Length: 174
Image (cartoon, rainbow, N blue to C red; front, top):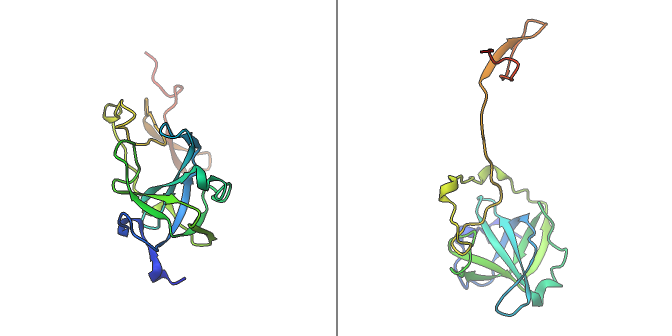
């Protein structure tokens, strides 16, 4: 397939037909149960070559079709997904659209390597994280730095110098 035929996530529009994407699986997702019809759905997080993320949603009727087909950290050519506007009642990773993988969606593993170098991480303060699950953005990792010790330079036995963090042994006694 020629590169000109492959779309990026940012170029997609809701209800667009006949598109092919090269996407990397960032998270396979677990089966969740929809309150509306008590059937399982799976939300898969994909990343494209531009560093844009999007949910791929698999409903119960296609679950068996895609069972174990999408592996973590592998890249795939995905053709003919259903491109839908996001449901604003639920948190979403993309502000505009999501993919729905159905029985007519074609998925083929590819050797195209999608790196994280184009992905920009977004960090926020704890106070900025919404408490309501309906308003919350998905979180993958929360990191906390409690204390960073001072960097000190030291001389090795061979007279070379190096740096390390100050340890409690280096702290001056009071």
